Length: 190
Image (tube, rainbow, N blue to C red; front, top):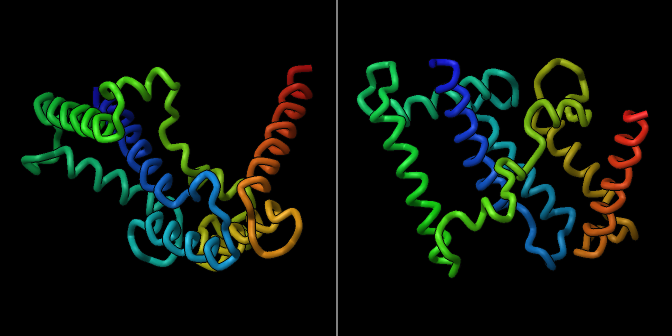
């Protein structure tokens, strides 16, 4: 029961994190400059550095999980009752419905019909480390490492090297990455 509850809390946090990260994503047709990419990286790093120690590591994950648990544990007794858990779920469903209504959609189930992918805003800590953001291999990502990785991704997308990534360049880069994944999956299937 506890393990299921912890997993449910983690999933809730990932969804919320995806919404926050989505706010940093560029608009569909917006151009992004190198300065924009640096600013986004700084904001994203600050959000991910949950314990404020200047590094992104496992301690931040623990701090985020603890904060989510504390938000659900309304009476602060160190355990989550069925009523507390249910209240969080109902509140989340209500907020989802309100957002959908503000956007002129029917109810909150439109996301489910579209195949909503929570946490879509980024690869997460493990993904960042796999993408070589942890340049010194110490198991933590500093602000400098995080920004360097973000700027490397920016440069890969900036096909013409003019310091600005257009919507077309982003689309072309996404499609190229899809092709790489498809080829990798086909190779692994053999």
